[in-house]
Length: 267
Image 1 (cartoon, rainbow, N blue to C red):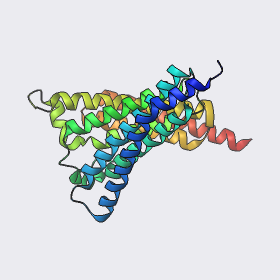
Image 2: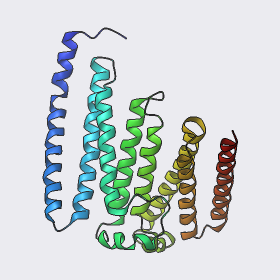
Image 3: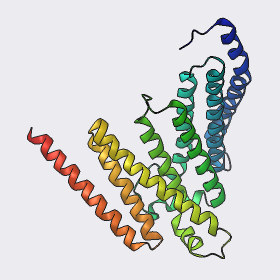
Image 4: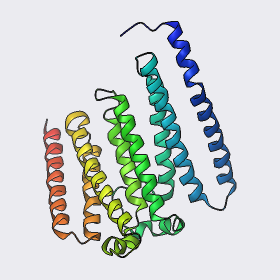
């Protein structure tokens, strides 16, 4: 790594100033909005969605600072990337506040939450989910493959997969999924596909985390929960053969976990 000279360091500080200023402005606005929510504003879900979008934007400003560091100093700005990681967690938490963080939950259990966000369109829910997913992927790329945060991205992506799934009210939108004449048909189809992919990816991610890193049973349990959530969607869209396949897979994984537990306790 080349030695960083003072001229380049000053150049970088000047280049990132506007980004830092903008971040401070948005974080200041976040505090104001949270105070308004605590005081009881009219549209709390709408405000939480806006805060989520703001946090995604802040993460992009931190990632831009990293890009400038790579360009000017030829080194990563890990502090900026870590701040981006933290604000993306905040973005997810704002959505968890609306639709919970439960992985395998029935649509009826979310009924009250869906009622509260019924004025937020399917297009908006899909749009914000895609935007958040893209930011997480860009951040993972920026950290690089051998980052110490490798396994923590399994959790970040898992929590994202859960809110993306829970924002999609399948009781309401399954009919749009099946009706090519519905104005929401394209969005419903794309959204369901995205959620299916996220759930499968998170199931594999937690399974790998268990096998290759932690050996913690809660990681394997989460992997199974993601499969069961995938099973619910397959049932909701009438994909019975795939639902059966996923159910069998979940049973195999559970048997594996039980066998590992027995093997561990016999040592």
